[in-house]
Amino acid sequence: MFKKFDVIVIGAGHAGCEAACAAANLGSSVLLITQNLNAIAQLSCNPAMGGVAKGQIVKEIDALGGYSALITDQNTLQFRMLNLSKGPAMWSPRAQVDNIMFSVTWHKVLDSIENLSLWQDDVIGLNIKNSKVCGVKTNMGLEIEARSVILTNGTFLNGKIHIGEQNFGAGRIGEMNSKGLSEDLHNNYGFEVLTLKTGTPMRVDGRSIDFSKLEEQKGDENPRQFSFINLRKEPLIQRSCFLAYTSLDVHDILRTGFDQSPMFQGRIQGVGPRYCPSIEDKIDRFAGKTQHQLFIEPESNYTSLYYINGFSSSLPLSVQYEALRKIKGFENAVIQKPGYAIEYDYFPPTQLKDTLETKQIENLYFAGQINGTTGYEEAGSQGLMAGINAHLKLNEKPAFVLKRSESYIGVLIDDLITKGVDEPYRMFTSRAEFRILLRQDNADQRLTPLSYAIGLASKERMERVERKTKSCDELITFIENKNANPDEVNELFDEKETPKINQKTKIGQLLLRPQITLTDLTDNIPYLKEQIDGIEESIKEETIESAEIKIKYKSYIVKEQEISEKLSKYENLIIKDDFNYQALNSLSFEAREKLSKIRPKTIGQASRISGVSPSDISILIIYISR
Image (cartoon, rainbow, N blue to C red; front, side, top):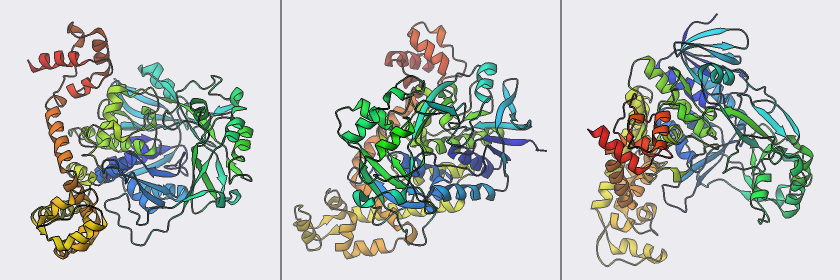
């Protein structure tokens, strides 16, 4: 019935979709298997993409030739650039998206790729011979051959939903879980399998909400986009989000359900996310707080549903419902979907190589929540990298691995395979040592040339990056070498409450003032405006932003680049796969144990393993250098 495929991808969430597209676009024949072809790339939790650090990841996926940014831009309901009051390393794009059309658009993309096939089924086991994967077994009794397999099962592996004292097997509300695969890999091939927990809040009928009692939160006045290449042809019509707040009355009602809480009564064994806790966890951990902020977000232009961001709960539905109706604006609220917690299996990611291939089984890759991460963005980036590397390995080409100094994706994967996870992993800007280098504005300049070199990023995308880089360099050179006259800028400086100048001064020097933007100077210096007007319209806004950041933060950027270059000397010092750590008695016992288990590829990775001390690293460097 089926031919032999180069790559089979299991699961059509964000990781699976990016993995399948990447491998297929590079030239592999791909089969994407999922339980429900009408639920592709679901936004199971909040209907939004991006956010702090996550937005940078979406921009990186786009720069590499993935689809998450393009599909987000096509379905944006509201756009906001977060953290604009902070430095550019912290600027993070976020978009509220249409949950229904997001999935439909992803389905269209998958259908448009010539050598990518779809199949609705449940994979219950793998065919493995001589420690090498060679196909999958499905619930329908099929055995489909493949040269490589990528698992992106999300929360479906032995997923169990909890609502108060009720629990039942499911991968999402209304969708059955997946059984057999975890047991197969654990019992027959020695994989370690553990459990994590996440949750989602109820969905409420927007017609039953009194928005006049809520705080309106509009999108940016001039909304941007995620993709570097998909230019919006028409102005974006944005939907408003809203802010609401819990109260002590709400907290008191929620506490009445604690004796039925699966989390507090021990029925949930999996560890939940630290940075996105349930509402009952919040009021328990922060008992002194009188209120918690809630974000009321639209689900789609084609439904009345609203998502209550911040009100995730596994308490009995009656308690959730009573507490919700005590929130201002929700006195007559009608629930259409319950809030719930879900436990699911994951495979500790220290069992993976830096390509996301498993160490135990050749040509088997894991990506997404199966690796202990949380978030669509983290999942999508792993899927993209797994898809790329599966194709490259099958074609005997070098692996595609991003460094920590090159991308948030590099930070994410390195953290996973060296440190592992003991709670759902979420990306933050603070996890990146070189975040001033890893800005959202320069993801294309950092990553598109690397992706183009392996054949994934298109020629059109690469040429656009080259034009942007050239325009940016020319603008910076102009700004750093041209003078401004006092009569051109002093009135502006008065308005901005910054000292006037008494003589001609380089425009670049004036731009270093925190009160002054490049737009301010452009409006007052005619020859600067003329220079900027000459920039290609499709890249003008990006060029201006990039040039201003590079000038204003030049000293910080140079410093991070120097540190990165110094560290790379040892960061890239290769450790052989068969290195015998147990033979080095000068290493601590814990270091020998951890290094033997994780088997890092470089000294840099070894240095980030918990339990491996600086003195252990020094010993390794001396030994390897010999």
